Image (cartoon, rainbow, N blue to C red):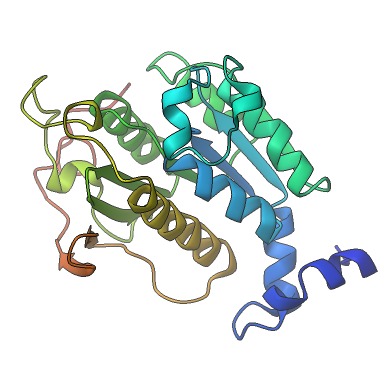
Length: 258
């Protein structure tokens, strides 16, 4: 594929980057990224990937925009309160970049539909922008079983974390967080709040990981959990190995189907 004159102008700053160039921009344009969750994490992810010229963006979210979302979910506005988030995201992203394709999925991911959604466009990279443990473990297991790379993140209060999984190149989410915690064991954003800018910081890192994976530039957060403390403005990289006893990617997996 050759870039048009308009694309060369639009993505000139991308192509000026060492390691990306015109070839990397073509890879972005030809790539397909699936974002699960169009909220506090998903908002900056979607905006930056659309702006970067990712050619196809799938947006999965079964919720509607609520006024309480607007404190952090910058993809949406007062004018779309009550609208399905996936459709609100599609509208905003097409306004930002009319050349890309945005595919909305107005549903929550479940064990019965997640494989079909991932396979719908044969997405190259999956991003977990959800806010609950059930979805996070489901996304991890689906990506491991389907051999799809993905970015995990979580954020609550002033703190966040990010890791990237690439099949055959490192541990998955279950290698470090083996089982879903019981309800009430871990505080949620509803319990202790969430700083919108902290979600923005973590989501932007996830978008960066997707761009790096697609273009092949830099080093990914594989085998590393990046943690963030907004109060002290501290980042910490915590290395962790693949767990041979992991239930989904270990030597003798017990999770072989969703």
